[in-house]
Amino acid sequence: MARTLVVLSGRLGAVLPAAALPALRGAEHVLADVSVPAEVAGAAGAAPVPDPTPGSVGWPADSCVLLTTDPAHPLLASADAVLTVPEPPGAALLDAVAVMDRLRSPGGCPWDAEQTHLSLLQYLVEECYELYQAVEDADRPALREELGDVLLQVLFHARVAAEGGVKPYPPDAGPFGIDEVAADLVRKLVDRHPHVFAAEVAPADKVRTASDQEVRWDELKRAEKRRESSVDGVALSQPAAALAAKLVSRAGKAGLPAALTAEASLGNGPGERLFALVAEVKLAGTDPEQVLRAAARRFAADVRTAERSARVAGLDSHQLGADDWNRFWPNGQR
Image 1 (spheres, one colour):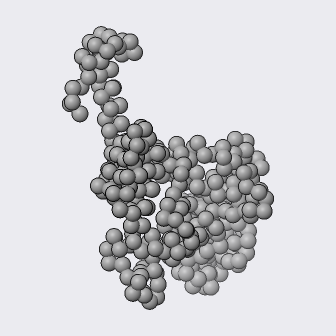
Image 2 (cartoon, one colour; image 1 turned 30 degrees about the vertical axis):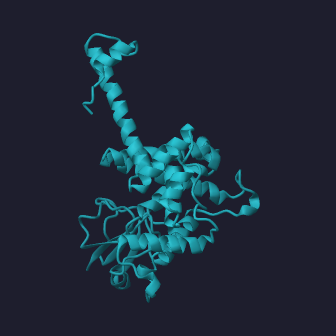
Image 3 (cartoon, one colour; image 1 turned 60 degrees about the vertical axis):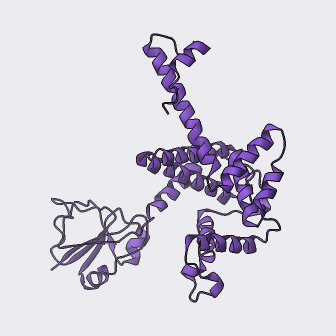
């Protein structure tokens, strides 16, 4: 006689491990504790019973299969066999979707319920920059946290979009949710990697290097989007240095000579001079946004170093004059 504990996944619903089928067919009793939804218990032919624990209900004397969603069930140690439902990578995303649904549903959080795409924009930008900094700082705990915060923004916007008719979009724009977002992403990745996913790879789709893939990606994207200009689709809301670099890159990929890029940058205004410098850096193969951020962070570090030195000398770091700044400036130590 065998006593088999089958631990179901609370995330995956009515999914049984294949190894449980022989036990279900051969057991004299199939039971389900109170953690198993009634529809799941019914589909498995299990009789719902109160949660059995040693000293109370316990195992029946004859062969029995007990269904539960509790991975630490009290009868775990006394079971002859324990079968679990393996969860695929990403299964915890279902929990995140469920939490977001709870927050936006009646009886959830009033603040979350009243947010719109527009009101969330400030948080989207902030979280992306915090993630950027975590990568720059090589801070893996922060990286993990900030990835979660960016994921929250994706889930939040998708949940708002699922409700449909939310400003600034008209009601006839049509609702969509996180499943549609994920499906579109999968379709895009598959379509733009025919050398990986196609049953037969056409000669034009063969990719041997990362550079080949960049060229092919741009070709596929241009055909897919039906863009008239090489600079169509560039996000104009990104930071100015990144925007200028992206425009230079797109035009360069379209064959615009570097000399014309330099000519377009001619002018005496600060904007033209900045654009010319960004173009020069980008055409040299460096990310202007990254090097400018690095320089800005070095400057901030120098300011803090000077302020600390002033405090050590007994001065108020908020009341420093020009001579004090010159005295305590790191003098090229960074």
